[in-house]
Image (cartoon, rainbow, N blue to C red):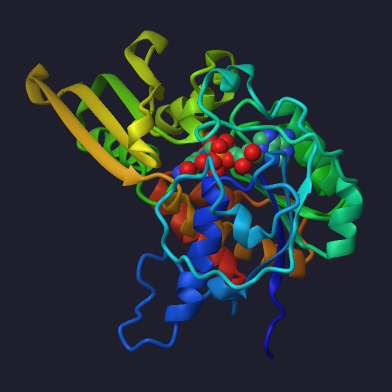
Length: 369
Ligand SMILES: NC(=O)c1ccc[n+]([C@@H]2O[C@H](COP(=O)([O-])OP(=O)(O)OC[C@H]3O[C@@H](n4cnc5c(N)ncnc54)[C@H](O)[C@@H]3O)[C@@H](O)[C@H]2O)c1
């Protein structure tokens, strides 16, 4: 039986949304090529769903260069700056609706050139719940800027009122907050979160190396992870007051791999600076100092350079498809396996190899969530 497409709504048509939608079209266009081997994907098929079985039914933003525009136009509009993977998107019937601004836009954005920052439109907000209902979407993807706690709770509430699932790609805690988790469970709505863990980004590399130290009997004594980038995500995070949950999310992702967590002063992890000319290129500088056999010290230095937004695309494609099969199986509340695999701050942390096995069991129907 052919399955119907998974219909999603997007909140925040920024760089991540742009890469996700271009990526889906990239795979749709290349699926019949003889050299196609699921290049760059973690799963080509999830319970019958391919990446190109995802379609957008609604989109919300607040920027005057995106609101009221077709989705095809909005994903390439400034200040988006990610690498163009697939320029020829199909004409979309979806027009970007005006969302609720709330705490989505930091004041310091006004001090930067318009091409680099968010510019709020003067259009009136739409009725978000009505748009969700009318568009018949299954899942809402939250791509709001870091620090948008009130806005995230607003869209999560809209999900609860309309029966739409949430895949929370940013670090305002919903799936990993017991109160919110209970509300989704009580309504029988599956949710995945929080804060997407990129395919091969700073977090997964740092976690894997931390686990390696632990497994090889090397005591990790101190570590830092310093990140720079030039997209609006990094510009937004220059406002340190918005960073609290991002720091918690990124730090716990590493501490959870240690039997005895490091003292706070021995671990420093965070988005560290905004370098405009880097655009969507993110560079991570990592240092780990440890003690090995017979108390002899060692240290490791690593520099990782990635295009930030496509790095989250394939992970999100898996989160969406797992969420959809949970909907079909009538499972409500946080999905432990895909959240642990795909998110930095899941309800429960597992080592990444364990989380991957859990996801495969879940997909095969041998694990409830
Ligand atoms: N690899 C990654 O890029 C990655 C990994 C983990 C988490 N994240 C998180 O995902 C989120 C999205 O990242 P991005 O790079 O696409 O950010 P972005 O800055 O490119 O996009 C954010 C979008 O949200 C819109 N927006 C702001 N306030 C809004 C509101 N109230 N309602 C609707 N739209 C609003 C902005 O206009 C913009 O289009 C960020 O929180 C980021 O930290 C990204």
